[in-house]
Structures are given as C-alpha cells and as structure tokens.
Image 1 (tube, rainbow, N blue to C red):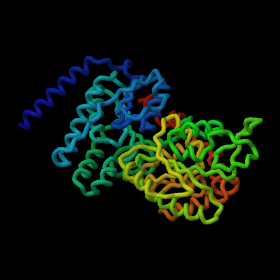
Image 2: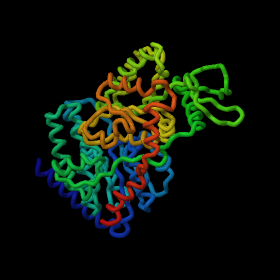
Image 3: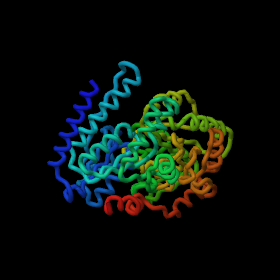
Image 4: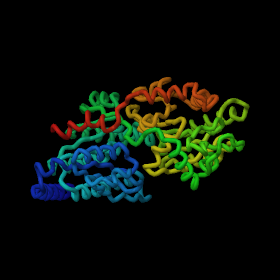
Length: 466
C-alpha cells in the first residue's frame, strides 16, 4: 500500500514538472511576486507592508491568505496587488485531537498548493512564518517546481507557540521544531524581526537571516484634535465609553458644565484645547491569545481605581482594548464582572483606517505581548511609537531592542508594577510636566526610519540583486 502511495506521489510530481515547463519563465516572471500568509490577511500588517513595498517597486504581487478582516485600503486600491484568498479549513470535532490536527494539515496543504498553482508564475515567494506548518514545505515545493526563490520572513517560531498549549516535550511540538528548522534551511533568503532571532537562527538552525525591524507605516502619526473629535463621535455610536466620556457637541470656553468631555471647541476661532479634568485614554491591542495575559492589566486597573476614588490627583480612565481572537470572550466575562466607577473599558474591533487614528489620539499604550520564543518584538508597540505614543510593556528577553526603559516608555514585570507606573504617569494629568510628556517629546525627536525607508535599504536588495 505504501508503495502505491509513493508511486502516485511520483506521478503527480512528474505531471507538475511537465506543467511547469509550459508556464512563462525568465524575464516574464522577474517582476512577479507572491506574498503568502496562512492566516487572515487583514490581521497581517507586516505582510501587507511587504506587498505594498513590492507593488510600489513595480512588482505584480499576488497576496495570498485567508479572508476575514478587511486589509488596509492602500492594499485594496493598488492596481499591482491581486488578493487571492485561500479556502479556509473548517475544523470538525471527530476522533482524537492528534488525528484532527493531521487532517487539518493535509487539507491546508492541498488548499494552499492548489491556490498557488492558479497565480502568475512568480519570481519570488515571500512567506510569513509562523504559521509554517504546512506552508514552508508547500511553498518550497511550489518554488522548486516553478523556479521561484523562496524568502521566509521569521516573525517567531511556530513550535514555541504550540508549546504554550501542549508543553515543550509534546510529540507534536518536537515534530514541529524539527520541521521548522529542516525546511527553513531550504529557503533562498531569510528575514527576521530582531537581532536576537537572527543570532538564534544562525546558531541553532544554521539559517542566515537579515534583520528587518518592524517600522510604522506613514499613516501611523499623531492625530489632530479635530480628527480625534470626529473619530470619537463616530465610535460613540456603537461603544458606550466613547459616548459617555467624550462630548458629542462643542463646549464653549468657560462653560461651567464639567462633563467628562475630551475636547473643548473654541466657538470663535475653531481651535481645540484640552480640558483639565478630561479622562485619560489608555489603549492596548491584542490577538487575544495565550501569549498575552490581560489579567495583569485588569488587576492593575483595580488598583488604580482605588486611588482615583481616594482624593488623589489622578484622572478617570477610558481603556480601549482592540482586536479579535480566541480568548476575547473569556476576558470580556472578566471585564463584565468588574464594577469600576472611574474606569470604563471597551473592546471594539476597528477598521484598518481607524486604528492609527485611535493610537494617535491616546495618552498611553499598554503592551502585554510576551513572546513565546523571547525573540520577536510586538508590532503594536512599533505602531504606537509611530504615533509618538508612550508605552508600558511587559518584560521579556529582547524587548529592550525596542522599548528603552525611562526613555520612550516603561517596562514592568507584574500587575503591581504596572499599577505603580499608571499612577506615576497619570499624576496631575494632563499637565505638561512629568514623564508621560517627557516620553512623548523623546519620541517626537527620535528620527526613526519609517517602513518604506527601512525596507528599501534592507529587503529590496534581495529582489534586485539575486
């Protein structure tokens, strides 16, 4: 029986090799590229940026992944980018979990390979990892058949994410680790997100990579107050905290009504100024997965709530946590059980165009991403820094490559330390003195590269000189 399977597989490969010979090659494919994500395209910002950068350089880009969240409008309206959706596997609860997982991998293999056969023969395939099982092997086989060059962008290790659920010694985790290292070495080029990961890939996997730090796109910037007002009025139609905490109508100067309004509109000149007693806006974003423990933030907010009600110079808070993911329902139940008087929490899903506006309007960002490998960096912090938004981030191994403690933000270890940081940063808010505004000024004066500049220097040579 095994011999028949191998014979059938050999016959399929032979047919594919013959088919490949009939496809366009050479100069016709040199400016064609595929950007592949075995996940939701709209929730893969770094790969969206890759696709846009390639398209702006004249490449015809096939952007492959699952439907779900709408990608950024720049992707949707770019004539050089063709979005190609992969049919998404629908899981079923039949048989042992191991067999279910094996069946899922087999189905994903067939769906991904079939989808790639439909696109223009690319000169390059740029693949996001993780998830790498089965996408690394599938894209390598495709590149072998089509004469394409495979470039893997290592965001993390898939096997370390699996270990959060199954443990490091689980058979599936060990198989996934071997698979990732073995097939990863078959790529032509490799990109990674930190110098720590670059070193680990070389030492432990014998894979040479270049580091491309996540950088904010040009649309991540501070939001003008007039645009903030329009954003909050629009969000307030669906989310109570925005409606309750931000004024629906302009407030004239000197108005005795001290509602918890976010902005005050100057009736004569149209200028906008801050109200002294306005609430502070705290923002976090998440995929609601095991590598982010939001109980840390909730406990810190409980501590903060106690001191706001104790006569201290601390503002009320509006806490906005954006994102979708498997643990959202769990944390929403915990949030619903809280009975705050001075803190309001909402968990909206924002359109791609609204998310930068929200970050550019906030007073402080909080990041609870704790890397499964300790080797990647949270892109959400990169986006916050692009908006000159100071950050409090939970500590892990290579975080100092991004967050400079006491310079552009603070690093904490637990909920009590985060609570202390919130109280210190928001003391006598929103006066210009204090570390919160010092961090913002430091971010404004930091001439960090944007994505386009960094990509041009680091990644484009892989496509232009190979």
